[in-house]
Each structure stands twice: as C-alpha cells, then as structure tokens.
Image (cartoon, rainbow, N blue to C red; front, side, top):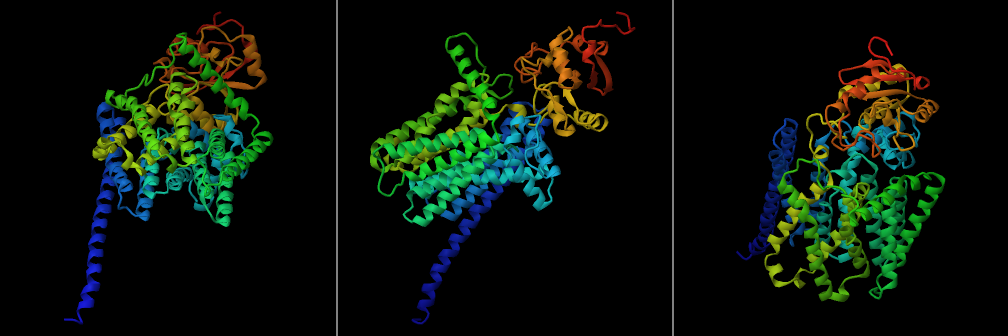
Length: 631
C-alpha cells in the first residue's frame, strides 16, 4: 500500500489534467460547431437576399450567424482562465470568422469598386512582370504598388489566379491586423486579457468586416500600420538594447511598406506616431522604463520614406487627396449654417429599422465606454502610461469624425478614419477591462450583461454604419450600384471591344466603367467640370464644341451606353459623378434614342442593354437626322 501511494499521488494530477483537457476540448469543439453554424447562416442570408427575400428576414439571419460565431470567441478572449496560446488561437479564429462575410459576398471575382482596380493592377503586374502599370479605374493606385506586388508574389509562388491570390492576401492581413491589435494592447496595459479585449473591439470597427477585407490597398496597409505601432510600443518598454533595435528596425520597415502601399494609412501612421511621440516626451507621465525616442524613430523613419516616395514616385497624391478634405469642410460649414441639407444618413437603403437603431446606438456605446474609462483613469492616475493616454486621445477623434458623414464629400473619408481612430477606442475598452475593479459597483455587478450588450451594439451598429445593403448583400441587378450594376453582358462587350478595336479610349457612365476598364483593359474617361462627357447622354442637345475638341484631342473615339440608365434613377445618385445634370433622375429614353440619329455617333455594336458608338467629333453641330435621314 505504501509502495502504491506515490503512484496514486502521481496519477491524481494526471487525472485532473485529463479532466481539464476534456473540458477544454469540449469547449473548443462547441465553439467550432457554433462557428460552422454561423458561417452556414451567413451563406443562407446571402442566398435569401439573392432570391428577393424581405430585408428583415435576411438581415436577421445574417446577424444570428454572426453572433453565433463572435459571442463564444469573445467569451474566450475575455475570460480570466484563458491561456496566452488559447487567446492567440481565439484571435486567429475571430479574424478568420470576421473575414467570412466579405469572402462569401463575392468569392469568384471583383464586385466592389476598388476591387476592380486592384484586380486589374495585379493582372497587369503579373502579365508584364513590372510594377506601376497605369490604372484607369483609380489612377492613384499606379503609384502605390504594395498590394499588387504582394498578390502577384503569392500568385507566382502558389499558382493561384490573381483574384484568388488577392483573397488569400486579404484574409492573412486581416488576421494579422487583429493579432497586431492584441500585441499593442498587451504591451500598453501589461495584460494579455486586456490585449485580447483590444483585439476584439478593434475587430468590430466599422471598416473591419467588409471594407478592409476587400481586395484593396487599405486592408493590406493597415496591417503594417498596426504592427508598426505594436512593435514600437514593445521597443519603448524593452530594457534589452538588442531587442529594442530589432523591434524598431522591423517597425520602421512596416512603416516603409505602409508608405508604398496606401497614402491615407501612411498619413494616419504619421499623425498617430507623431501625437504619441509628442505626448510621451512632453508630459510628466513618463517613467524610467519608457523610452520616448522609440516613437520618434518610427515617426522620422516613416516620414523620410514617405517624403522620398512622394517626391520621386507618387507626386500626384497631393492633388488626388486635397479635393476631398476641402469639399467636406466646405459642406460641413454649409450644413452648420443651414445652407445645405447635407447627406441623409442611411438614405436609399433597405436596412431594417432595428439595425438603424443599432447604428445610431454605436457612437453612444463608445461614448459610455469613454466615460467609464475617464473615471478609471482618474482613480488609478499614475498607473496609466502617457503612451496609453495618447492612444485614448486618438480614439476620441472618432466622435467628431462622425459629423463628416453628413457631408457628401466627407462621408468616405470619415468612414476610412474609423479604422484608425478605433485603435484608440480599442485601447480605452482594454483599459476599462484591465482596471475593472475600479469601476462603479453597479457596473461591476452587471459587467457580463453590460459587456454582452456593448458587444452586440458595436458589432451590429458598426457594420450598419460601414457600407450599404448592395455592398453587403448580393441581389438582383440594381442600376447605379457599384456591386449590382455589373453583368456578364458588360464583361462580354468589354472583351469584344478590346479584341475588335484594341485598347481604345471610351466614354461611359461610372458603373459600366468598371467592366470596361477591368475586363477590357480600356482607357475610360473621368468626367469633370472641365471634361463634361455627360453632355453626350444626359442632355438633349449636342455637346459643345470645346468638349468635341477635347474628345478628339484625347482620342476618346467610342461611347458605350447602358440603356438601363433610362429605367430607374441610379442607386448611388448619379451616372457621371457629382456634375451629372440628371443626378437623382433616370435618363430620359429620348436622350439615348437620339444617339442613333446623331451624325457624330455611329452604332457599331449592340446587345440587349448596351450600345457601342464610334464618335466623330468633327460632325458635332451638324443637323440631326430622323430615321429616314431627313433633317
């Protein structure tokens, strides 16, 4: 019996460990089942929307699926007993799961506006073997080859198509971005649990689930943005000189990759790293173990690469970005003085009222979190580092940015800013969790219920604020939507023009542009007040002689018309950009029919909905003939 005692003593721990292992296995198995069921329901919701089911039905199905996946992962991330490895695994699963909605939305080819541009850019890089091919959909993409270089490299290494390689790239970068948020939160608050909460909240930002998972340059650049901040934060707190140098070297490299990948993300990185550097240097919260110079190294290194890139490679960037900021500020001023009605939030959308309520509640939930966080900061005082406070101040930028959604030119910029300001929101949420014992008693008592409510509000509300219904859900053809105006008919016409006429210059509406440029490699016009090509279809008179001269001089010799623009108003509000004289209205059929008799337009190709004309600018101003040829 005595001899058996040690054996029993050794077996007991093994038995307890076995019970723990079984419990963990059951927990992860049930989580996996819920994730699979959630993915299935997301797919079902897409089938419902494609089949014309009521929005309330497919929206509810979608959100049940999302909640089935996110809630159990959130519970694991926030639990005290979760190990570091388990948290990392849960974060990776969260990244994969939150990439599912966009992947299932269009798994086989581009659908979003920016995706057409980046897919075309990647195809051209792969076919030519050279970076910087011109891009007629988003011309500035030519000067930021990071995304096309990475996707082309993946395609070459794996044998995947350009689109599949791009999808792999976006899933990997999405997961890595959320892992970067975890590393950043852990470094700032010295708590793996707080870091996991930071990753969770960041994964719920308005851009994360759809916008930053599309095949486009921001979703790639934001990964390097996040890791530049995370690695610099680690370096600033490291006591080992070699580790500091290593982390800072990688951080600056991430900043450099960000520079060559996306303009706005680079600007955000410079502003945020600069704000942190100034805060950590200037204020008296700095402790001996913090090293402000780390942030200055990141700032100066990224700024140097950015300045060189702007001067020697991407000089058109300034003229490309400046109109958006100038116009949005002007429009906000007009709204404030009641000179403009601004932009109706969630206009022309089929979102159910209950999702709109969540969308309105999301900023309020963030405000409540900030109120609790400020209370915690006041109670713990010196325990919060100046770098953490700087990130929180950056998160507060989220609130004024919401106002820019009211301005038509500022809406897109406001939405894009949330991917950056939400880093600070995530840090504030993580701080509240790290010091939850300093919260008011009633909050501590109901913390699980409050946390669940905040999770649901941010998940549903932020996605609702991000993109509209046609971007999120597949469905029948919808004229004037980037995602649902595409058709196999337009692709066929684009490829046929390319085969028959070559890479010619074409005038067309903003929706047909995507197919012509992406699939036909055609050069498509950019409408503007100086180049009002809308005069060809949006008026009942001939274009003026200046436009005719400009068309001839730039060799825009073809016009492609989609007759469905006469059937209904464009979903996005216009067919030719902000200068469209028929904005908000369908094009009168007579405006399109007259092209068949105009002496300056000769019909050379026709399908059920598309007509292709060869333009003869020299004939502009001659008499219009009727069907019999009589003036």
